[in-house]
Length: 451
Ligand SMILES: Nc1ncnc2c1ncn2[C@@H]1O[C@H](COP(=O)(O)OP(=O)(O)O)[C@@H](O)[C@H]1O
Ligand SMILES: [Mg+2]
Image 1 (cartoon, rainbow, N blue to C red):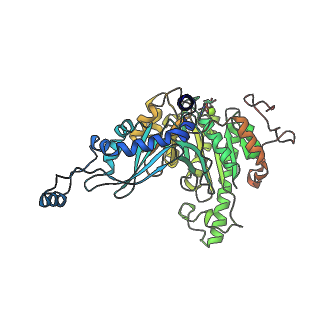
Image 2 (tube, rainbow, N blue to C red):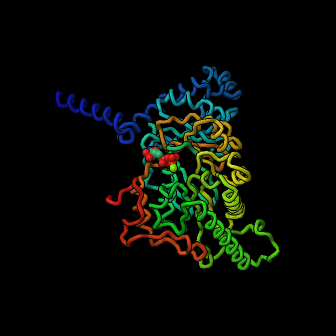
């Protein structure tokens, strides 16, 4: 008997400790069973209390009356499937006549409390079927990416969503993106995750980092071209525009499109070309875009106009030529000068980290999802790396990228350095690598060479 008591106390203590220190392990060991039982036992009463039941239909009432039975109860949505996951539960429900997906979305906070889950989100799968994704603990507090990601060319699993699913940055679906955030909010870490995810893929990376190259230069071995000041950046962007024109010539020749069709009207892209002809896709990463758009003298203003024009052209025509823009900045609005809003309109993907004011949040979401603006403002200052991202369906989600250190990203880039394609147009901008050993890429203070 005492043996049993000791064992029981030990198990309870372990569970408590895990729940406190390692919520992910707690979920996998104890939490998932408790939560499943709790949801199944409480289901009918919770749905009733949340107003998610419908009164019995006329024919059931009539049947009860005819057979002299008690009046049937109201009915909750039918459970089609209950699936435990690594971070929570997924409940698939069939709605009753008269209910809609909005009812469940509006009740998600009440459901969260009633089932004692950390978060509940709902989404419509098809008409009449809604999926409730519940998380057992705060998955964004300590981001652990699932080992199994659905990898495809040009699709990077970059962050974790609040509901425990993976957030992908899919360049073929959303060619260009803008990432905003105050300083120290996690933009560079997000970008570093992208680079680490792209490094093993068949893609050329081009970086423009006018903050003296501290973020991207340590990753130089995987980059085909880098610029660390606006003068180099303008030459580099011109070279990219030239390459884009070259790619369009290849597409024309292959698809037999005549020379008088303007580039913008060529619908086919590099992905329609046969493998052996396909030019390497390029991802252009720009950190701190304001450094490119600000000017003090007349000379600098000319340079700024050239830079913005080149970026606008790349954003308008780059998709089919396989040139994708990934722009980071603290603000990206009309105060950066003319054509900036035009450029912003071309950047479909939007991600906003913590910002200091509503105007900055509006720059990311004001023109697409007004309720996302509110979510951006509510990001707490102590959760660096948390961001709101717009997705292709017009909705938005809260995400956080794993905290990849610069050293880890450098190691990944060095491991895949042999994949760095040599692009003749960009050869003058190839970063100069000092030394030959794997760890000898130029390093900043943040990542000492001894690791
Ligand atoms: N996803 C994240 N998870 C945990 N910590 C993060 C995350 N992103 C950023 N941080 C922390 O915030 C700091 C600043 O991030 P950084 O990306 O350099 O900001 P920014 O480029 O916006 O100025 C990082 O050094 C890191 O400590
Ligand atoms: Mg930064």
